Length: 403
Image 1 (cartoon, helix red, strand yellow):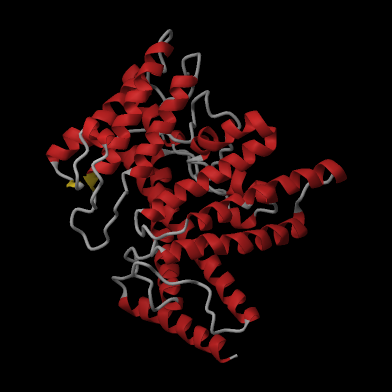
Image 2 (cartoon, rainbow, N blue to C red):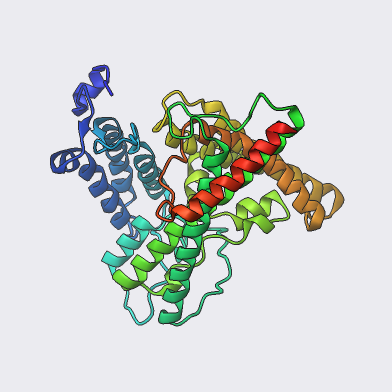
């Protein structure tokens, strides 16, 4: 990817062509913003450091931008990502911006059992914890109820089983998704979930089914990797199982959009979206701005992610898909204000499913068009099961096309 030699790029040492990732480019481009990021994580837990934190942030932002446009992270793989440093760098810049803005030191109130306070471990924990569990800055964070065994052996066994089960679920549904979209699934630009050759009612039934499969595929993938990270934290780093609470809370059972996004779905990026969009818009539009800004920030984050796969991706799909969740959540709040009743029960579940299918299909279509799901399936090594899944889905899809 070539970059026009803008004077600013020259000033901060951006190469005309992205340099491949190696020890030299990591040291020159990626390491500097990471060092300042950890420095700010240290400063923000210490008193009387705000001026220094404010001074560090512009330097971090500039170095993060420099890293994003300078390093080619593809490693010469077939599945190339053009800008996959953009989101990680945006994440650390956003977190550091919040650290620069707070007036009082951040306080950690949850540590591993039988351990004494350690500045080093607090810095590491703060740098890597995104939802803020165990810290005083995670205001309003919902943490799902723990259902896994409390003893270490039982906890590890439960998490291991969960990782295996979700790897199977993710792999199976991923293959089903691929079978529904046999052409364009692995190419850039990708395909679409909307088949214009079908009558409208069949077309949208099919796209809704693909959206549901895409949702559960994404859930299984994220839960599997969270389980793997949990095992690494507990077994390798010696962390307390209490430091790894559940990531999801059965979002498919949510009886309102507020419950789906605020409790059922993962909250790992909640605070980042609030800092990027929620808090700024809340100063102007109050509660409505808080909700709308957070969802728009989520849409932008996901757009940057798919842009790294397909630079022709359309911004509107992510902004509309995620952004329209805000009016739905705000409508629920207005409903409660005027009727005194909370959106819940079977009617609430049907409302949630309908709204999620309506706008979730826009999101999943954007993902498919950018070939986001082209990653290898976890059941590729089980050809019999893979063939069975693909056969069933293709027969069903053929039947839909014959209606």
